[in-house]
Amino acid sequence: MYLRSIYWLLVAVTMLLSSNLVSAAENFDYSGLSSKTSMNDVQAEIKSTGKPGIVFVTQPWCGACKGLKGSVNEDSEINSILSNFVVSHASGDSLSAEWHAPGESDGYIPRVYFLDKNGEFVKVMAPNPDYAYFFPNANTVKAGLKQVLDGAVGEL
Image (cartoon, rainbow, N blue to C red; front, side, top):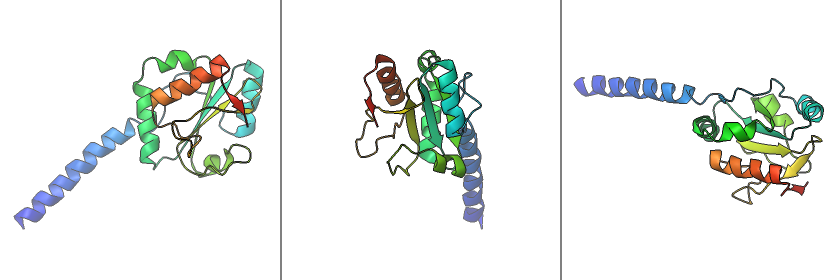
């Protein structure tokens, strides 16, 4: 009986601690985040601002997505780079299904898409060529952002 009580106490403490850690990375803390999330709306905003775009595609239940959001939230340098972009966060089943690069079957998450100033998808070198849109942390996202700004991208 005593061991069972200790077990449930440990389970409760673990759940409490993990829920606090997870909630910190539920969303991106970037102040310039666009309210637009659909592909057409984001592409229209990109065209109207003349800025390139970045779209983070995540799911609320995804551990890797929460890790990416937490990494981006904690990186102080990335905010200054993101100010040069239209930044969108597409989260949930319907938006995740809508956001796919042309001709690609990229069903994994998180995915990060980069778009040029015309709202067209551009190819940015991801760390793993088998997962062309998987950027696992802020450092890999920053490298992709810099590629777009430097014009070192390919067309899809």
